[in-house]
Amino acid sequence: MKKIAIIGAGISGLYFANLLEKEKDFEYKIFEKRSKLDLEEGYGIQLSVNSIKLLNKIGFKNIPASDIFFPKKVNFFKSNNPNKICDINLTQFDDDLNKYTTTKRSTLLKFLLKNIPKDKIKFNTILNNLDYSNNIKAYFSDESEENFDFVIIADGVFSQSKLIVSKENLKPKYNNSIALRGKFTKYDDNNISIFMGSNFHYVIYPVNQNNEYNFVAIIQKKLKKSELNNEQFFQSESFINSLKKNLTNNSLINLENLTEIRAFPVFVSKNLTTTNQKNIFLSGDALFAFPPSFAQGASQSIETAQDILESIISGADNMYNNRISRIHSINWRSKLNHFAFHLSNPINILIRNIILKYLSKNKKFLQSYLGKIYRN
Image (tube, rainbow, N blue to C red; front, top):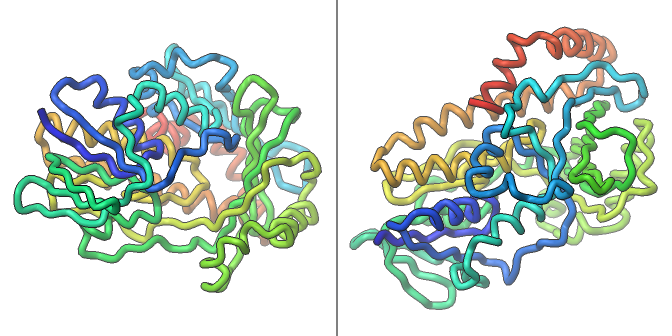
């Protein structure tokens, strides 16, 4: 029986635990630094067909239909013009059983937690060190010690655990952007709508069948180091109101009915962190945190966890080789989207919109740019 430590109870760690529940040759334990998981927040996530296919294998297809949504299109708008520029048909990437899906992050977490015994998760626990001299000996913040055959590090973009296994101090980079999140009720479009403005964009989409919609704006903003290190700064009413004012002054959006509003600095990975220890794997944002303009964070966390299990079972050591190629593909798409969505020069915007109209109907381009990520 092989023992596995999972560091972090986010989407990647919990999905990996669900996979292990179906494997008789492994036992595992999850170590989470928080005292509990936030299962009440209503912010949304998008799940492409690849990740839905993997989730359906562990029972996601049985989730109540009211808790998820299947958007059919992505609509593109200028933020100050109500006329749609163009749209992309998402159903071309679906199959009969697996469809592009939106839902609440908390809905997915509740589903993943449902199949994990409570005694398999140890809260308020941080990985302090690892000793590789005999298998892997893990030392934790509560002064406990355990031996494992494998360690999966999935504790997020600010992972301290990966600093233990990597000689490089690859801290995430502030992306000069703020994410403003919130929730709408009763919006008049059941698809994913992207509104592009000067140095910002925002996205609205349904997260279930109950008239709840996710709102997220990505706003370019340079901040001082002292501001980035001040968590209260992002929670202050004056800062959030300044972001809202920026959006309403430069677009047609009405934010009066936006609730559960929170602001976050956007951090991304500068480089891919890997480890020479073959029995230690990085997953989710601990492996690589993408810019948020391609909506692939959750899906890639799930895909990577699947790759790790297959690598452990097969004994192959090429997991990172395959994953690196995919990460690079998604990262440059995310950066390109961010650049295109935030254009401010009127001539560049005109050219962008003409190109968007053409490419949104070009099946060969869509299969290459989106299909390779969503389905392959």
